[in-house]
Image 1: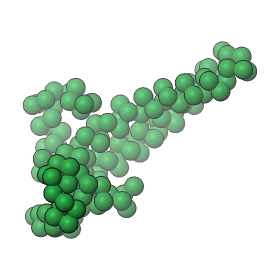
Image 2 (image 1 turned 45 degrees about the vertical axis):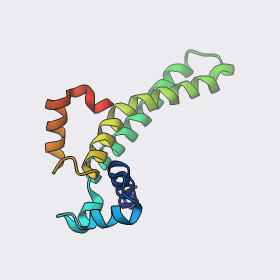
Image 3 (image 1 turned 135 degrees about the vertical axis):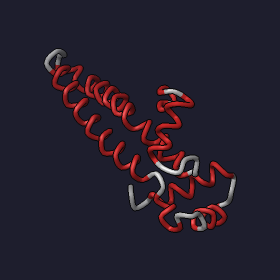
Length: 131
């Protein structure tokens, strides 16, 4: 995912600014951060992606063990599906704020991660991290 981050940055800049692909690339490259600007937002993305994977795996395994001991054999496939869905919802609690920060940093809305977190928290409130 980190290797493809520059492509995601170009896409996000295009969506935020209405620029075409080449104009977005030129805009990113000419920013004060230079080529490093292609990796804006990679830190919150990497942290949230890693943590959300851990949460998803842990939630699925816990739910699966809990359900397997309570349902008959014929319902195991359906409960595994439900466990996977619930685990995905649980991991979203970690993934969504990281994705929000990543996209806003890529779009140049904040000069840095801590500024972005503080700005969202004070101006929009904690619920904004999940919109």
